[in-house]
Image (cartoon, rainbow, N blue to C red):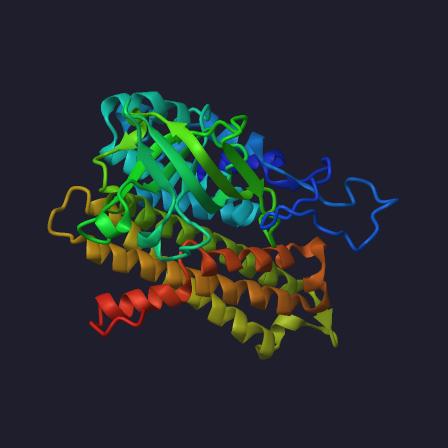
Length: 416
């Protein structure tokens, strides 16, 4: 952890930032028609229009010192550590002030590679993993679709096998982070029509594909979003897009089971990121409460300020214990056959829920503690508040986690 903090400090200039860039094309991410701009922008500079830039230097600094391979095998150039260590790294990045944007710039490179590392062939591993660790390749995770949402078993993107054993992909993905700059996508696509599959969980396959954004059969469209704008989120359209047969990970039709290894890891990492954001916000709030003097006394001397901050601290601490318990359980399950995957799923989902809620409480309280200045960009807490909504929504909603716990733990009837 100390070493990582030194890297983060040395690379402070590389953290996500707002910089000038040309304005967008005017196309709405969800529509092919041009968007009408009501506010006239004549007279404004590009800097004032607040466009965004991916933190490439930050990514490169982490790659240079080996952090991108923290949870990948030593034999392939990784550190050979676990998701527990990766979660701590992601928490540290978010807590440093980089927030969700900084964490998400490398997020998928850590969790999306877990299914590949476990189920990939030796050739697949040697061609991809060392290059991902070195920062030469970047990865995005292609699962979510606009028509399916959280109902992953109803994905429609289809990979049709060709006579030469390659595949032709058609369909649409949405909310794909870093698709503007990724070289590879871990793609979950249907290879058997749902009605022909023996089980709902079968018929989906996982691929590690090349993203050739210059190919007219692939279109990547950026979504303008509320927070974390230094890291892109996208819609991705495939129209008979060719991928090689060698890109299939594991067995055809078993993609859903395979990708769960990445999903549980992602929940741990996101929980760590939420914790980092929450602790950062709480630190800002406590500092302000100590220094801000009103009615000739620090505002933190008032219990109306102090008690909510103390409450938030305890929520974060409780969520921290749940998060690292889940991460350790995930790591232990790789070698301990007595640990059921359902136990891992319950722990990881619970951790993500608790950390997201604690982070939201911390970020909201930080804004309120700052009063009017909490609304000002200068104090950072308004950015933390916008970004803290991400772990509440993604990659699975609070409500779906509650459904999962109700069904799997409490054995209550399924409601959806």
